[in-house]
Amino acid sequence: MSTFKYATLIIGAIIALLPILVVFFASFKTKQEYASTSPLLPPDNWLNFANYTKAFVDGKMLLGFANTTFILVISIVGATLTGSMIAFVLNRFQFRGSKLIMGAFLLATLIPSVTTQVATFQIVNALDLVNTHWAAIILYLGTDIIAVYIFLQFLESIAPALDESAMLDGASYFTIYWKIILPLLKPAIVTVIIVKGINIYNDFYIPFLYMPKSGLQVISTALFKFKGPYGSQWEVICAGIMIAIIPTLIIFLILQKYIYNGFTNGSVK
Amino acid sequence: MFKLSNYNYSTQRKIIIAAFSAIPMILLITFSYLPVFNMFKYSFTDWNGYSKHMDYVGFANYKRIFSEPEYFAVFKVSLYYFFATFVQMGLALYFATILSFSTRFKNFFKGVLFFPYMLNGVAIGFIFLFFFRPDGTLDTLLNALGLGHYIQLWLGNPNIINYSLAGASVWRYMGFNFIIFLGAISSIDRDVYEAADIDGANRWHQFRHIILPSIGKIVQLNIILAVSGAISAFDIPYIMVGGSNGSETFVIQTIDLAFKYSKLGLASAMAVILLFIVVIVTAAQRMLVKEEK
Image 1 (tube, rainbow over the protein chains, first blue to last red):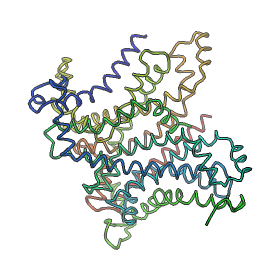
Image 2: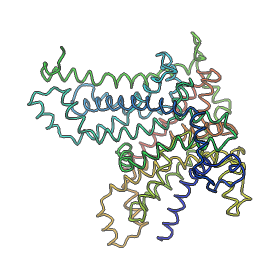
Image 3: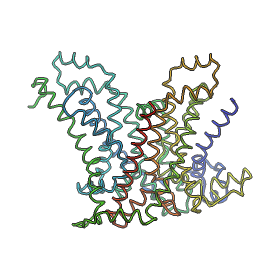
């Protein structure tokens, strides 16, 4: 039984890693070496960074990273603020319409965003945002319902008595939100940052559709462009793939624990 | 200067409710509800997406979709991805269960199995293009294992391509199901297993009678996600082969119709049909879940 368990785990691990590992090998190979050696063999020279330089410079990956970072930071700050604000109001006050708002957010989760994308495009176009960073930013902000859920869940565990004692000291509701609730929401904020951050960094659909201008390329679209001109130069494409993956790997290794928690908190309950 | 604390709490309450709800609600209405409304409207027109006027054409777009098989073929492609998600969930459930109990290098295996889900969609598309290409990783591997005669044109053969692409999709999303199931299983009280151990239950009994019932809801939630996930398959077939060789999915077709061929009305009608499918499946699912209770 135990042998079977470890055998399946090892096979699973090989299947998960092998496709990435061969790309990693190829990214260090020279053109001749790539053509003449098996993809399963490691490169001769682990320090051959020529492909990386070429991919990074010719693929304008720096521009991709800059655009991605810009969109990422603004979207995440915005999603954290709007998500925690609406969650604060919904959790702390009973008012006419609070059920309606909650229902509206719930119902929206049932609409797969890909189905409405054609119509959404017309709205973004009418707002004159197509081919600007703001097209992506506003869409990453507007569709975020997961964040609201995560915040609501955490707010449940913050005692309202805390607000009341602050009110005795004369704190305004805004002060309560800003000085008491927001700092206490820190674990939820970390969760939202991770879940949203991964989605935004890896998204291809929105930047591809809404920001075709080459100056606005993000990591995904920058990498996609390798398809044409480097079609036969797999060693360069492989280096490009690794450049796009390495930041994810580093973040994953550092934040592993939080990431696991983030995904379980975000999608369950 | 405006200061919130100058007002009494009941006025403050009104101000803060209005101020804090406004932006999220405007975003929700503009980018979730208005598109649905417009989509219905466009689906009854022949609008091309940029012209100033649009003509009302009744159900012509819908008739066309149901009468011309090429439009409906994309839903058949979704079935590959739909069935693949069951393989994916089965694997995820298996790995989540065995890694919930003491295992050597547990964290290593957890990390490795989950990691693919974190990767960039375009990078995954390229990784599998490299994997499936002639003389690529898969072919070399099969040769090395002495299975060379099984080699196929993985992406060139229309009979095989959707299996290859759905396989890549399983590779990509298995980790997501896995981590969700792992979280759900870990919330089961440890004492229950101990009691079961004392009663002589083996791992399979424990899985069947303790784990599965406890995470039933999450499994169902994942099946709902599988339906919309199968229909929204886009990244992998588009990045890898551009939807060629019979791998065109619903999203690829809609984008092509709307933005390449300027048939926005027709594309919207397809999206409406899709939305109905998703809503019906979700509703049916909910009803089944309720009956079980």
